[in-house]
Image (cartoon, rainbow, N blue to C red; front, side, top):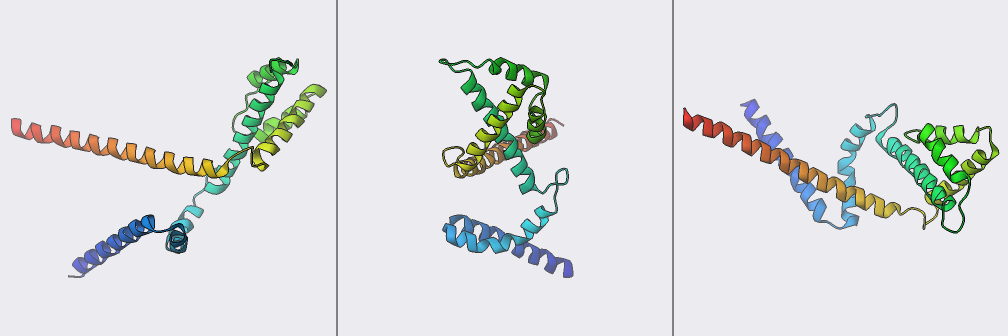
Length: 184
């Protein structure tokens, strides 16, 4: 009797959460913001998750800072290898990138470039730092609102695609199992 009551209470709780989530999705942004308090339990859970000692928001911020550095390197390279003026540092920077690729820790890569024995490399590092600052801070540099909307849309599309593939695989496996039963 207790198990039955617990099961019905759990089902009611789950259906209530689903109904609230659907209503929140249809609600205005102001109503969704007010409903975010319901998601505090989820936020507390994800705050305990870490990636190499970083919370998910800190890990994302670090990844974004690395991406901004990579973008700044690309902008500087494009500027140095333009059609009207080709800097002699462009091929040197490309060679440096081949020898020491810019991967996960952009700050360490930049620090290493700043410590290079040749002044030209250090000046390029300063130019990259200034370009990264423009990308990060200026409205023309990086559209954070678009990035957030694009990330949300991409996540939704990927989730939908993955769920469809999983359900299709499950249905196909079910068809194979049921056709094997008929042959027996």
